[in-house]
Image (cartoon, rainbow, N blue to C red; front, side):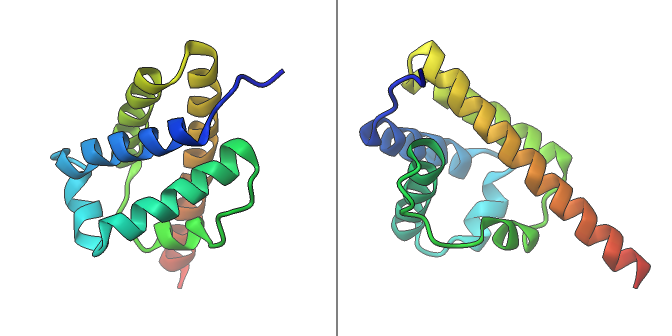
Length: 125
């Protein structure tokens, strides 16, 4: 049985995590440069994580295409994942935190693979 994860916890996760991201010297400048309306972006991210974690279907979009536009490298993903795991452990009970972290790691792997593929295609052109 999946651990209980609530919308309130997802909201707290997103708000707390992106507060850390915005202040982070490594990845903060990347996100702060691209996100013009943080309240709107946070609402979108809450819908995304609700869809990922609770299968609500509220998120409509293509996060891969969005992230392909960013100047991200593996170190950025490592930092993002470290901050995300830290925050998930602060918000959720251990079993739920493990589920949330595992999903974030799979998403990051997919994004990194997409970015690597896109860069490979560009270098061949």
